[in-house]
Image 1 (tube, rainbow, N blue to C red):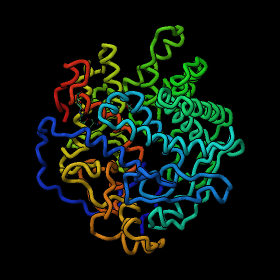
Image 2 (tube, rainbow, N blue to C red):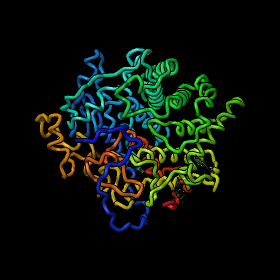
Image 3 (spheres, rainbow, N blue to C red):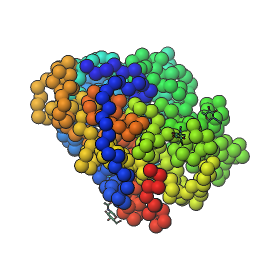
Image 4 (tube, protein in one colour):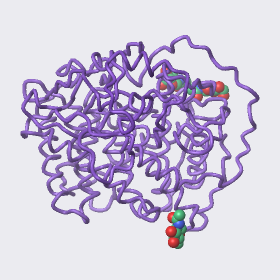
Amino acid sequence: MEEKRQCKCKHFSLPNYIVLILSLFPTLSLSQSTFNYKDALSKSLLYFEAQRSGRLPYNQRVTWRHHSGLTDGLEQGVDLVGGYYDAGDNVKFGLPMAFTITMLSWSVVEFRQQIAAAGELRHALDAIKWGTDYFIKAHTHSHVLWAQVGDGDTDHLCWQRPEDMTTSRRAHKLDEENPGTEVAAETAAAMAAAAIVFRTTNPHYSHLLLEHAQQLFEFGDKYRGKYDESIEGAKGYYTSVSGYMDELLWAALWLYKATDNPKFLNYAIHNANSFGGITWAIKEFSWDVKYAGLQIIASMLPMEGKTNEQKKTLQEYRSKAEHYICACLNKNKNNSTNVQRTPGGLLYTRQWNNMQYVSTAVFLLTVYSDHLHSTNQMLDCYTDTVGPNKILSFVKSQVAYILGSNPMGLSYLVGYGPAYPERVHHRGASMESYRDSKVFVGCTQGYDNWYGRKDPNPNVLVGALIGGPDHKDEFVDRRGNFVQTEACTYNTAPLVGTFAKLHSLENGTSSSSAYATPSLVSFI
Ligand SMILES: *[C@@H]1O[C@H](CO)[C@@H](O)[C@H](O)[C@H]1NC(C)=O
Ligand SMILES: *[C@@H]1O[C@H](CO)[C@@H](O)[C@H](O)[C@H]1NC(C)=O
Ligand SMILES: *[C@@H]1O[C@H](CO)[C@@H](O)[C@H](O)[C@H]1NC(C)=O
C-alpha cells in the first residue's frame, strides 16, 4: 500500500529505499541549444489536460483520460464538477489548484507574445479557464467558497483511476464561521491574474473574474482564519505553514495590477511590515510561501505617480526580492541564506518534491531578468553585480538539468527527450486507460494489479514535472517512491512562461541580440 503521507510535497524523511549507485558522473558539457523549448512548452500545457476533472470536452487531446467526478458537490447540493486533480491522486485541493492558476496566468501576463509565437496561446488560455470556470462554480455566495472535494485519507487508501472513483467525494466549504484566508486570497489572486489574461480577448469573462476576485479578497481579509483549521482534511496534505498574511499581500498586489485601484496598492503598502512583506527574506517560493513572488511583483511596479511613502515601501519590497534572486544565484554574503545546490548544479531546497522550488525559482528569475533588461538595470548582490544575461544563463542551466543534462541522464519533464521516468506516481497513468478497458478497477484492486508492477506506466503523463532527484542528484524510478516520482500541477505551471521565453530567444524574436544569445551555463 501507498505510504501514508504526512504533508504532501513538504518536509518529510525519505523512506529507506535502495539508492541506485550512480554510474559515471557524466561531465556536464552541454552542447549548446540542444533543447527544444517549443516542444517542452507544448508538452507542459498538455499535462493540464491529463489532470482535468469533470466532463472532458470534444477537443480533449489527452485521450487516455475520460469524464470523472461528475457528481462532485451533489451531496451538498452544489455543482463542483470540473477543476483539476493536484497530483497523482484524485482529490481536488483548493489551495494548490488556485496557486497553479495564478502561476499559469502570470506566465501569460509576462510572456503572452512568446507563447503566442510558439502557437500555444490557445492551449494556455484553455488551461487557465479550466481552473477559473471551476472557481466561479465553487464561489457560490460572496462569503462562501468550496475549497476541497474528496479527502486525502480515504483517497490514498485506494489506487483507482479517476474514472472509477468510489472514494468519498465530500465537498468542504469555507464561510464566515469556517474561515480560510489562504484559499480565499489565493483564489482571488488567481482570478485577478486571469482577469488580466482575458481582458482583451474575453472582456465579459474578465469582468466576471474580477468581481469574484474582489469579493473573495474581501471575504478572506474580513474573516481571517487558517484554512486548514476549518477544513480538517487539508491538514497533513497541504498544511499552511506560512499562514495567510503572504496570500493577502499577494492577492492585493494582483488586484492592484488587474484594477489599478490604489486601495489595493495601499493595502500592500500599509500592511507591508506587519504582514511580513518587507521583513521576511525567504529563499523559497511555493504554494504555501508566497513572499518572494509578491516581493518581485511589488518591486516591478512603476514608481511614477507614487507617493514618497509608497516609493519607500516598494524599495523595501525590492530589497527582499533581490535577496531572493541573489540567494538563487548563490551571491548573498551569508552562505546559509543562499539556496543550496546538488553536486550536479540543481537548486536544492528539500527532498520531497524539490523540483517545485526549482521551477518557481526559474520563473521568478526569468521574470526579473526581463525586468532588469527592459529597465536597463543591473542587480547588486553582495558578492557581485549581475546583469540580465547572467541571470538568464543560470535559468538555462537549471532548465538544462530539468530536461536531461544531469547525472542521471533523465528528463524530469515526463515525455520530453529520449529518456524520462516511466513509473510516475499517478493513479490514472499507472493503469490501463479507461478508453481501452472500461472494466471497473476497485479500490484495492488497483494496488494489487497495477501499483506494484515493475513495468512502465501504460500511459505517459506528458509534461508532468516530477519531484526529481535528491541532494546527491540520485533518483529512483519507482512508483512507490512518491517523494521523487510524483508530479504536481504547480510544478509545471511556472515552466510555461520560462519555456516560452527561452524558445523566443532561440528563435531570435527578442528585440535585443545581446539579450538573445546569453552565454550558456557558466554556473553548473
Ligand atoms: C520562429 O520565428 C519565425 C519568424 O518570426 C516564425 O515564422 C516561426 O513560426 C517561429 N518558429 C517557431 C517554432 O516558433
Ligand atoms: C546567517 O544566516 C543564518 C540563517 O538566516 C543565521 O542564523 C545566522 O546568524 C547568519 N550568520 C551571520 C554571520 O550573519
Ligand atoms: C555553503 O558553502 C559550502 C561550501 O562552499 C557549500 O557546500 C554549502 O552547500 C553552502 N551552503 C548553502 C546553504 O548554500
